[in-house]
Length: 56
Image (cartoon, rainbow, N blue to C red):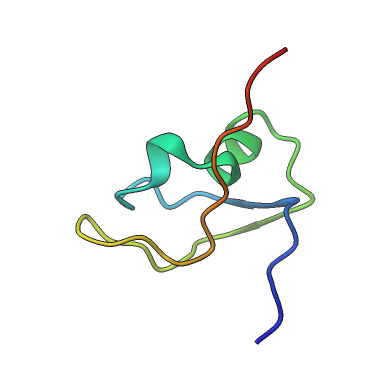
């Protein structure tokens, strides 16, 4: 299965990993090339998780 590019944002704020996912960050700051809603839930992540990057 091909990996999802890192510049695809996610607007699924129900996902348990949403607060610590870079996809949510790029969705909120409008730098995502494309927007998707991945299938994470309150109990599990979607599998497309990218850890938040440190601000420099």
